[in-house]
Length: 201
Length: 201
Image (cartoon, rainbow over all chains, first blue to last red; front, side):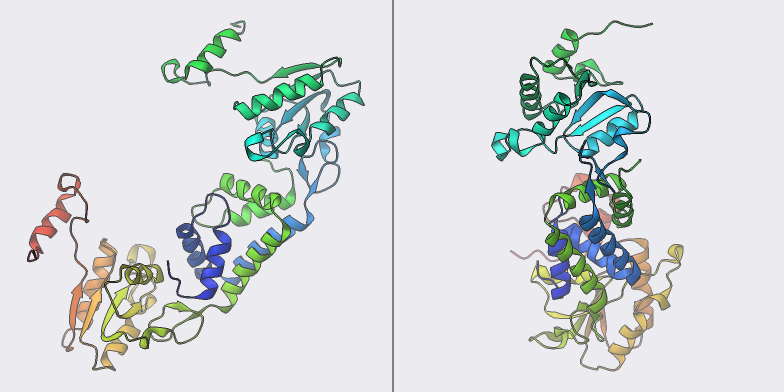
């Protein structure tokens, strides 16, 4: 598409680099920005630069935060369990369930040879160190995605922890709450029978 | 949702002000930005600020551009026709068809009493002035949206031009190329019969 202005073209190109935003959407955003007061653009741009320059990652759990040490070790948490997740959003989602009050460990991805991501590219070493150096930790919950890459990552971590006095569990795979059996795929349904739980009435 | 960082929260809020972007998408964009080099964020922010501060609108046709006078009056255009559109994207879309080589006039909206937009809020006056002051213009094509607001705007402009020696036309309303008749609404189908054209073989 031919743009009426170099400034529009440049802005569209920059916005369209973001995931899930094509050039048409980017153009719509550009025209929206032009219709809004200049302060809106300034505060958007400043928020992005501020974010990128000043964000910190907790040295222990690697969750995104405003300081080098997040609140992961304080706030009355159960410090004997670590929930291992791929990204910060996963940790946020689990925290929002209200069902978990332990610690977190953000791997920053999953093992995916197809994408050139090996065990050294994600924070598995620091997880193992964290468990080795802290005898208080009794359990780690693997809350990884239910894909081949997620499973590979889970197997790799489990293998490294063999011989350590720590229980390794995984979040349950099964039929979602409210889900119909007939629409579930066979693997999930099979797994939900294999890992059936005691019905509590 | 509770955010792990004030910076993330602020950036999510700013991004979510853009149309069609909710807080979940905004969070995904924020995490993407954090995974990319700092230069990417800088160039995105600079492009937006540069756009907002330095964009110009052509004094004649009101199309977005880099200067006060766009190329609308040059470039071997047919200067006897003006195509009236609601926004710059419409003009771009028409130009991209390659079927039109005349001038444009961007109204900057359409008459919509429900939204408090009257004839004075869009650039109808400057269109009338443009036609009055230039006897070269023989035709104006109304390329407005096929909604009640678009029709109202079209009627209003037509009324103002009564008595002027200028032909007022509208883009054709009908069945889209490649469209099935059975899925078309009655009004469109009816209009496509009323305004049928000579079949050229």
